[in-house]
Amino acid sequence: MSAWPEPAEPAARVTLRFGDIDDDVIENLSAGTRIEHTLFVAADEQAQIEGLTKSGTDWSDHRRFAIDALLPVSFPDEEADVEGLAADDNWLWVVGSHARTRPKPEKAPGGCIDLDDLADLKDTRPRALLGRIPLIEQGGRWTPVAQDGKRRAGILKQGKHGNAVAKAFRRDPLLRPFTRIPAKEGGIDVEGIAVCGDRVALGMRGPVIATHALLIEFAVQAKKSGSLALTAPPVRRLLALEGLGIRDLKRCGDDLLILAGPTTGLSGPCALYRWRDWVNDPPHDPSRVRLHRPERICELPFGRGEDHPEGLALWEDDADGARQILVICDSPSPARLGNKALVADVFRLPA
Image (cartoon, rainbow, N blue to C red):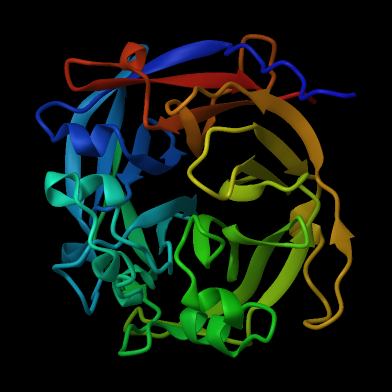
C-alpha cells in the first residue's frame, strides 16, 4: 500500500513582525502576495490588509489598510473573509470566500450548543468580494490607494444577492446545490486568486466534484469609475488533485502554482502543484472540459490541529538560481509565534 511522500524540509524560515495587533490576525492569516520588498497578507474573519516591508532577513514596519477605505464595499461593517491576494501590473487584487458559514459550536456560551442557532447560516453577501486596488511605490515600498490618477479601485458590484460571481454560482447547474451548504462542509468556498491581464482565476476549496478540484475562470472589464464587470459567464475547469481542494493560487511566469489541501477543517495532506504554461492554456468550451492534471511538485508539512498551509507568496531565487515560494500557515503552532511575530517557511521549487 502506497503512502503519502515525506514532506519537504524548508529551505529557509522568515519572521514576519506585526507590531501591536491582535493575535487573532496573526493566527488566522489566509492569503499573501509579494511585490519587490513589500509583502501583503490578510486574515480571514477580518476586513483589512496587512503590509510588511523587508528589513534584512525579517519583515516588519507593519501597516494596516482597511478594505472599506480602499474599495466601495456595500457591507463595510462585516467581515470580508479575504481568502486570496494577487499582485499584477501594479494592481492588488483581493477576493473573499463567497461562502456561507455556520456558527462554531466550540464558541457556544457555556458550552451549551443551541441547534437552532447552529442551523442559522451566516449571510454570504459581505464575502462576495472581488476587487482590485492601485499600487503605488513610495519610499521603496508599495502602498494600496483608492485612486492613482486615472486608475481607480473598484469591485464587482455587491447587492442583495451578492456579486456577479455569486449569481453565476447560483445559476450553474453543477454548482447550485453547493451554494446552500456552508464552507468546510462541501459548500462554495473560494480560496486563492491568480490574474493575468483581464483574465482572473479563482481557486475553490469546495466543492470538490467527484474527487476533482475546481478552478473558476473569467475575464473582467474595468469602467472609468473603477468598477468591474464580467465580460462572459465564468468557466469551470476540473483539476486532478488527488481529492484535495485548492487553498491558494500564485501565477509564476506562465505557470500556475496551486496550494492544495483538505476541503474541511481536518489536518491532512497538503502539497504544491504546478500547471505548466497555464497562461497559454485558456478555457475554450464552457460546458465541455478536459480533466487537467497539474504536476505535484512539493509535499508540505502540516501539524495535528495546527500548522495548516494556507497562503503563498512568490519569493526571490536561492543562491543557485532556483525559484522559491513562501508558505504561510493558518492555526500556527506555538513554535511559530512570539512577540507579535509569525515564522513562515520558504520552499525551493523544482525546475
